[in-house]
Image (cartoon, rainbow, N blue to C red; front, side):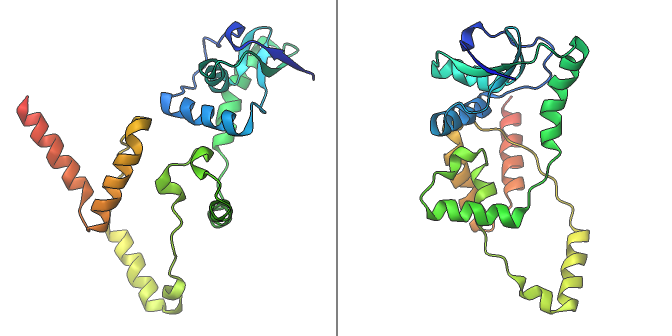
Length: 197
């Protein structure tokens, strides 16, 4: 397989691509390209994109004149259709070694590396001190497990535009530190707004 260079504008998105890229994610890809360069080639079939739709869109928005690509036109139409799905899904099936990940993120922070370009939300990469002393007391472990079983927690995803994310993060962090029940606060606001209609 050889790398060829293509103008992003001449590449055609696959019309049956079921993977959706938000503006927020495209901005993350753009930041990554600006920092690392465009080092992950797009897969193409002629001028049709097979894999790398997000990277191609980011390249267009950055005004790049050429990007690396690998032509996979040796694959059958059936294989291409299947690979478009497999390329996106298989990567999602991996898990993080969270302890090792946090160690790496912490090391990068100490080197003054901007970890915000890695694609994590700030809440995900905040290094937390873990209290392992609970492991010394079996009764306390049982008590905590019982407490977790009694509690039912649900998360509702709230999507923020990139320009609002940092402010929203700081507000949520502030109210959590105050011990506020954020779910109730959001629900009350939504009720109030609904009653205005």
